[in-house]
Image (tube, rainbow, N blue to C red):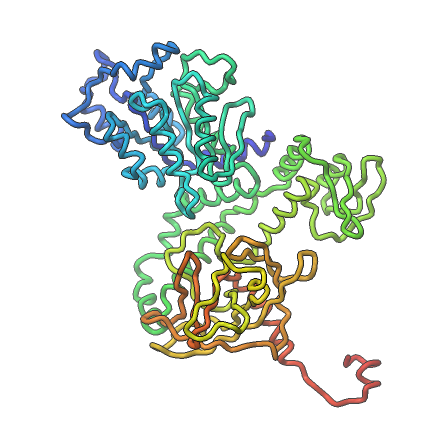
Length: 585
């Protein structure tokens, strides 16, 4: 990582992190016997670490005498299995982190780890630190627990994004490779990290770092992989910064930290004095829930703007990011010239852009110093990564800017979406009889796929809510044309098979259709029902529509405005010469 951006990422991680959970059967929280600290071990555990989580062993408090199996690492490597929990908690406290412990003492308690007894604790923590060998099982429990926690189900990871294996095992490569094989066998796409600072496994949603306890001989292992208890908090912060390195990830982390730090102010804005007015609004309109969400969302935006959150994305940090990308040597900077041909660009001319107050693309040069002669292009992302990754980056950012949520947004849907302004649907083109189900889009043939029709709902919000019980209401919809990428389009969506669909909303007024629906019982809205993992709407005529996503309101209103402009056109009979040669054409 670059120096400026690295420090910013580390600071963002330090501000964001709050909780760490350590799972280690040999963690020792009590002071050594004969110490001058006064209270006995029972009192120390309760007073020192009130968040410590330790299942009660059978037969009372477990003996501090370790079994023969637990001496295995000592005998083979000369290390000490005991983890100094007191020193570790003190070190974490110095970083403002709360540290809790789980200490499995027997097979039943190990089984409880992998059977989900502690899932709520683990998934609510920011970082999980795991010993590799628990009661001498050589990694079986830890590898099963890691595989359970990183399941690909949406929302499964909770807050957890970093898992550290903190072990006395001398073979850190073996630990990493064992985890990698297990996770790859379960379908995870992984990259191996070995950057001189340590060993790790990197996925899209999580990072696993393999760190060694000190005092163990590890020939051929990077020296920085061994970390003492006192050094572990700083190392965890840096590992988390690696997992969330970048301009937008750092901005997101620091924004969340700002919201947390200003939570008292936010709560004060929504004090109980407002309850009478809010209840009045809800009773009169029946729409208190949406109103409350809008109030909170707008207040969060105001808070971020008033605290200057946007100032974190400075030109200096962007320059640092660009220089680091160019110095990596992983790609050749390119830009799209005439006829969409990619041309190589001199890295020096890319750096020159950073010095310009107003960026001028036409100053870019090739490796021989010749002018490339490009300007007014849609993207220069290929200056900073490979052409394929640049295109994927633009497409993802485009989706993020257009869609409030969709099938692949990653959020866990507690409630299914409603039919409203901006809803994008799929309908099988006019062949589904009433009462029958449309073909499953995940198993449809190419012929069936050609019949599908994309629709955009343009029902104003005020007409899509507050429906009377069992009321039949028509919802206006316009067809969206599917085009090839590179042609003119409005939205880029992913369908149920995660295939890209470039959609254009250029329908004429006469192409609008009205589809009748009935309100969901007791809700006053038309809400989807999930079947086979896909939200679906069924019209009052029995036709089925599959939900793709929901546009942000301003994007849906742009299409609605364009359609309204076409509807408001004035048709006149006038001289053809006057119409074509005058201003009336």
